[in-house]
Length: 193
Image 1 (cartoon, rainbow, N blue to C red):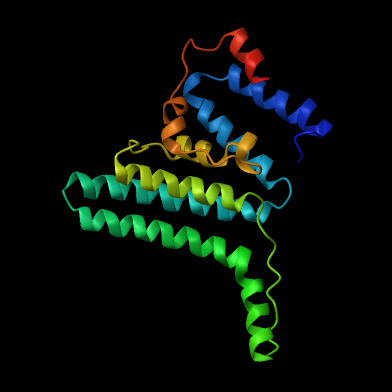
Image 2: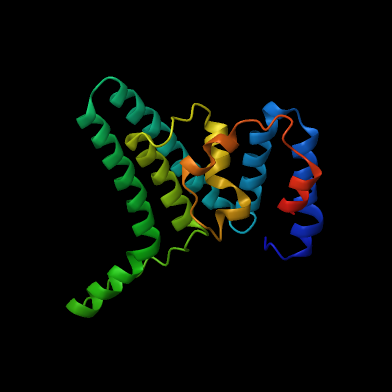
């Protein structure tokens, strides 16, 4: 789904805004999360699993880093951050660089290893670096740990920035993931639109 398409502008976006503002505040992050997954899956639904995997990996790693640091186990916390970075960058490398590396290998060696022809998941770089920034920020003490997988999922998959960026650091939006009671005004809605 493209932001400038009639489907997005006159159906998807109005439906999401209506559902978001009509829902009780405790359900709003869930609505944003589900809407973002629908938006992301519109082009290639199978990659929703990859997005969800990245979300779960860093949600768990963030909690692990927080717990280990709280217990004074800095070495364990560093290992958890390293694990998060390794998993995330491995996924990114598999989808972005596997065919390039196979082609380079074939050129150098004269071999004919077949390319994998993996489709590049939309926005994989953006959400990979976003999820890693969360775990790193928790380790550095620049962000608190998120206790809600739904709120964290809304951060990772937020459809207005998921496929085109920019990369948003968790610490910059963490307070916005909590319910905005009484803070919605027509001026703010107008500015957002």
